Image 1 (tube, one colour):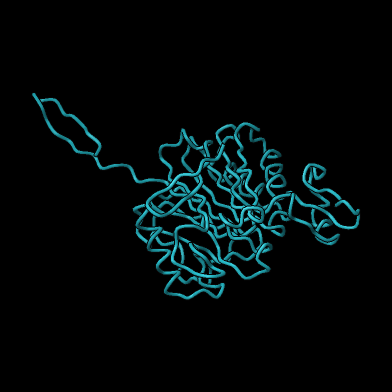
Image 2 (cartoon, helix red, strand yellow):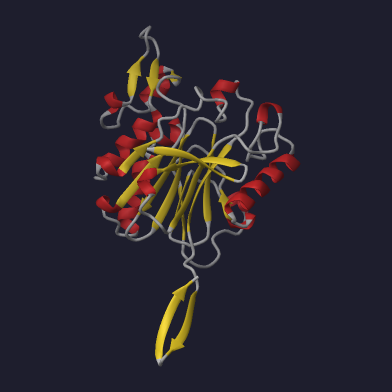
Length: 285
């Protein structure tokens, strides 16, 4: 079950599926708590949608202050509606220019790096290996979902990090729901090769178009990789139905902001070693 909480002025959602992961910080943010106005009101986190740059910078400042994470520790990629996955090693440099960051998923075991996904109807997905402490964020619009991006991320965890399906947890965040996502036949055909498509693809009431359940499509992909059903959690929020809480591209007619969704592995607290009666004691601050 997702819960809404707040840090300073920033409301956000968290997945209960990650309650046992004390090494993790995560937030599915809303559109509330920012400085932007009119169509971008109020916590717009994108510079590309037409909002005033100064207001977007204020919003990033508010987010950083609320979560006590320096702005330079947030990583946002150029989401391009594909299936490319950016794997970040635990140490060292990971890019030389922002123009290279054309990805729709990020995977890392690096600490103190908040990996981000911007959304305004597409599905934000957080995937965690709770045993090996590896995390992934996924931007899953219909194109990326049709390409199987969620299953590819889970498969990468199993191949590259030797993750076990039973150790993988997934939280599927707020996005446009089946109730509001009508698609044409060409889009529906893009999912023709996927397993269990009858679970997420339905003819509309008139039988001429289709309704697509994007969160369920991605849930099915994760299940197909062997992840147990109880390890996957859905938010239950439709962004178009809840435009007072979330930005919605479809609901706004295309002019709107983007909310941010981020996850980070926390750096372990430094150890303080002292000696008492010739015995060493270790404390974590």
